[in-house]
Amino acid sequence: MLISLTVGKVDAGVAVLLTQDKRLIEFPSILLPPNISSGSIVDITVARNLSSEAASQSAFQSLQNEIFTTFGQRSPSPPILRCRNATQTSVVLEWDPIQLATAELRSLSLYRNGSKAGSIPRPTEVQSTKISGLAVDTEYVFHLVLRTSAGTYASEKLAVRTHKMTDLSGITITPGVLPAQLRDSLETAVERIGAKLIDTVRIDTTHFVCIEGRGQMWEKAVEMNIPVVRPEWVEGCEREGRIVGVRGYYLNADPRLRQVGQGVGIQNQSQEGGRQSTQSRNSRVLQQPSPQQQTSPPVPTESHGEESPVDGPSHGSPTPAQPNGTTNSSPASPPPPPPPKDGRPTEPKRAGEEEHKVRREDGDRLRKPTGRASSSDSMEEGGGGHTPGDGASFSEVAL
Image (cartoon, rainbow, N blue to C red):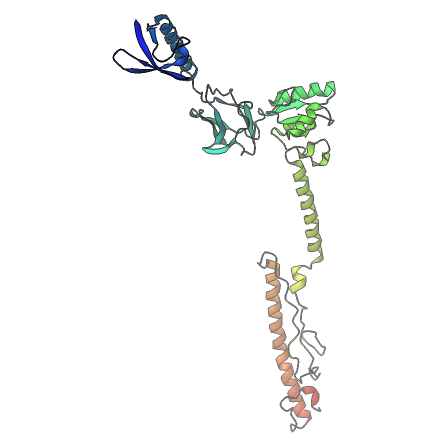
């Protein structure tokens, strides 16, 4: 289509064109022919470019398909959690590489029994972790939570039970510097107890066995805080039928700290202490007098002109005076025997007490007539006109 336009005004960038019906059209000056000025008439042809239009539409549609394929069909995948190894007090978990698609990673967290146990460092590189300090023979539930810019994705829950003390299948041993013969015997012992033997130090290595602390694997085991023990530790586990402590099996440990047999070291200490306490108790029993020696007083005898140690002085013999001027008319009783350890008197002791009581009563009965006879004799010899006054003893009266 051909259109004739009259140039009205020409500027550096825009020209004003007038149509035949007096309408103004702003037109770029750079598209006009050279040497155009006000009043010039120009013819402009206008037509639709269908081929270019089709090419542009095709390019736009291809871009839309690429965007949909890249960002619309794929999304992050939930992590897949597995148990790699379990021991009496630890669990090693692993998972497949995380799939983020086109989303951005925010965090990857591990949960234990519904509570957050911690965040995984470098989730795109690290694909395993070890959880220590667990209880023996206890079930735990773990799951991972992946947080991205496209949303949050959680793995399936994984139930893991720690092993019993007698279950040695979770022990994973890496051998270090060992002679060939000792290494062969170690492999045989590990196979007998049901443990595993690997050639490298990994995250699931539970013990590093060697006789010398040197080498790259030994350094890595020390760096990863893996117990470094001697081969005797495996023999101790086999002998005990359960996992034993590593304290006495370190490279520089004292061999006397090792337990030989089912608690033999503790039993020896208990038996030694029991023998010492028994010997001490027997020596104390031999030093103590028997109950009869403690409770039996001297046997009293009737006085026939002779003095008895229990019956007191004979007729006419004065009684020793006490410092306060009174007469000691009762015999001195022996000190009470110490109470038995169980608080109940034995039969020999009870019989000795009864016998002692009867003898004291006999002594009191024998002393009473003696005192009266002495008083009568004194009155007869003294003419009956002199008797001891109050507070005076028989030793102060002249006979």
